[in-house]
Length: 446
View 1: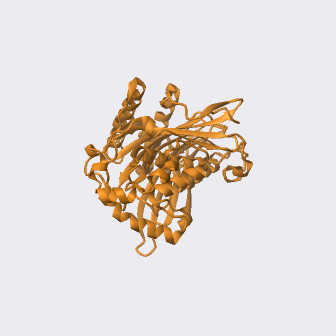
View 2 (view 1 turned 90 degrees about the vertical axis):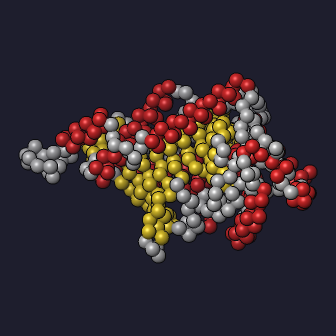
């Protein structure tokens, strides 16, 4: 049964008046700039650029619940090419765009790139789930997890064109995995800068419960392999959650490591457990922190009247990078973004508290964890919204961080695990599998 069969005929007739003219904008898979991405997202959910109109439009989305599928079997399967899109960021061709993305070191602000990736991931999912018989989508698609972002190049030039590509790679019943690739034009060709994997979830129009999405049907050996890797990613995520130090004790090897660190900090002149000293070239973890506060204004809202996830990632990245810079005394370069978990949405007007912690170091590398929570000033209750993990590379070897408490020891072990996984992934240089058979347009423009 197709999705259209569950929609009342009168409703289909009413909502199809603009099919011939209102959906041409949606069919284009090659998008000229990020402004168009944001316009498409507002169009598909009926959001407004005006704050008051925006609230009313989202309130009207409640009526779209009648168009939700009652099971995934009611929805037609889609192929990977149905969601494949390409977006240009013409920093080279349009100098007026550069100031928004430029940092003080004459490079591109990576936090801005995180914002664009988040918007692109949502749009990719709407391409996958789009029903041409409806003027607006009944789905609220939000970011659940940034699985990983692997950097292929560590310099992003502010005066060279950038191209984003992406498509759906795996689908569950209510969740969608998308992979994206960012390239930059240099010496006559586009070269890979980063690969990103996001996991999105579909909710009802009021963002209160899960909603079914179209299944994904791989076509050909290439797509089947990409889908298989998506299944592997899902299993890996489940295994990591199961082995979390928040749920199970450290391994015997990890317990020995923590005890050795403890012994290294004992004062040999005093035989007791309370006299602690720092080993050479090291710093207590409690001294490797940095905090920030953001008041969440309507300007930072997304199309669902919550604070934009890309904005949260940008602010967390900027705090984490600043923490790494202050800790090491030199400029850090991002190597990877890992396992950003979105636990709950952030409401407009919230007091967002960000806390960054250097939790592990090795050689020239620093592993940083940023924890974000909202504070209700009336009840004084704190609620965790996100946890971010960043890996930075510095210009020189950095001091070691030493845990003092058991909780800090768990942060240390978690950081060590994440750093090891990132280094193993980069050594294997597996990269990200994308479709190679289609050509969305000419890419030979500077």
